[in-house]
Length: 359
Image 1 (cartoon, rainbow, N blue to C red):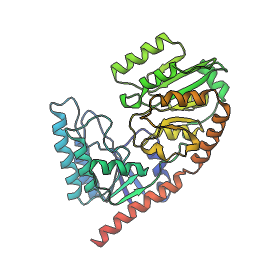
Image 2: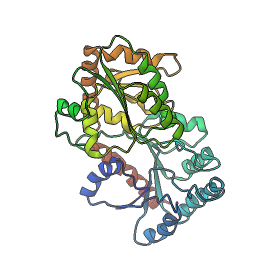
Image 3: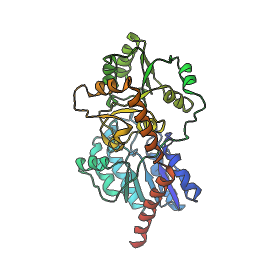
Image 4: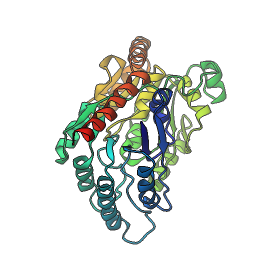
């Protein structure tokens, strides 16, 4: 079996998914999305890949667009999106789409909802990590047939743990007594960092606390907001950069709680990373986060006023709650093995190939 994957991503997710398949002899060819030229190289490449035997295309993100610096890029991207999907059909690819996000985080075309509906209707199979994503597709009016629910795997072993918790704290200049809340991942407006800052300031009854916001932010207004808070409060640390793989374990070892107060989410790799490191998670009951067991964190209704602060207040100084949620997170993480996930994904490929034989 030959498998074309688009687009290649730096997240370990793809390597973890395809490694067990490669061991079984499946040939996996990645194709990158190049931001400065957009989807054009992919359009030129797919006929060649088809000629050399690649029948299955696994799409992970809807990057069928052109660079943002081109005039009218949203309208042009909208047209090019439809053209690319039709080309794949014309070339008789069997296309599988893993729906990490129902629509892109930032607008890509003049109508991202329409492109999602078109792609959902024209792929041969869809994979989601949570039943909640099926609900989101339905709300958008998108096709929900031929969907397989396959969970997102853990990140066990991806980020080596070669230091102790005390050593991690020492390297990050965190004193032993501090209760540390970690926000991890790219900092975007929908991820609720301003709300986290406000809630953090209102936490009481804790002798020493610290908030670490670790992740790249490109939104100037958001950067300014975080800097204003960190400059006026020395217990707030902002690491505005992509976190090196060698530093990921250090941050998770050093923290006591992971908080991800998203206003919207489909699938969250950061949440799975917290679970992998057996860290108590404070997050809203949204999207794929709803599939995480209640025992593995404190999950709240985002529509309830002050829910974020109340849950942080409840857990930050309560060792029993932290210990029990940590244990539950570790147990849940151990069930999310990539060998099982890869096998289920491979079966989806085999099913779409079978439909080709029956046509």
